[in-house]
Length: 262
Ligand code: 48F
Image 1 (tube, rainbow, N blue to C red):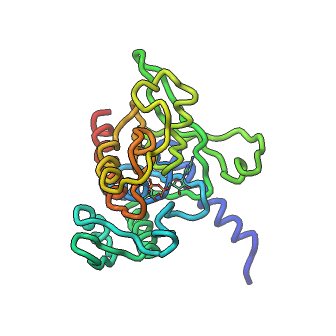
Image 2 (image 1 turned 135 degrees about the horizontal axis):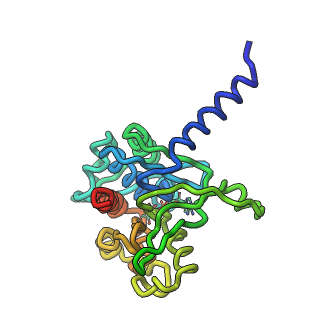
């Protein structure tokens, strides 16, 4: 006999336990695209307590669609080990251009991130951040979350909060977290571009820039992936993903340094 109530109890109990255990974490990664998943994997591997918040009901961000919905992505030599170490098959198409199946990339990146010990919560929108003012400086110290369904329905429902020592904005082209911070705290505008949004396509420049732009822009807040190029007005690069993976790895290294010094 199958009891509907036992099924409900299992789900409610298990997720509430997850929530309760993760009200205070080391790193909140916002966005489960290539940069966010990679950052979370490397952080969790080093023992950090990490949750990835993804507003869609699915992970992977822009990986699935490959190039114009041809489900393939390209990575270059310098990033290929990030995929190879989790078992993604890469085929050299032309010298230095490695192609992978986009569904395989999403699946293996996700599974490796979970296996490393990170939590991934879907359907959850990060609508704001928590901050404190210390010694004339603003520090970001957590995320403000709500069900994305609430946002989409336009309902007035107050959110809940998760305290995090570091927040990584890996929200892609929209750069939603840093955008919200700058709307509310215009004083920090001086450190990033006045206008947020990436420049048109220039793959080589965009790929270099996305790694350089991955940094702590406000104490406690790191930008990674396409969000980093949007903040610093660097070019887009289309379906080459090495920069996204390297940016995620770099975001993890920066976050680990912050965690060690805190
Ligand atoms: O867009 P996305 O894949 O970001 P990324 O890691 O990678 C960019 C590439 O996919 C591609 C590219 C490569 O050449 O340019 O575009 O920088 O993933 C971002 C994820 O963040 C989620 C969004 O649904 C997507 O899955 N997201 C955005 N805002 C929020 C969010 C938010 N406020 N709360 C939760 N999730």
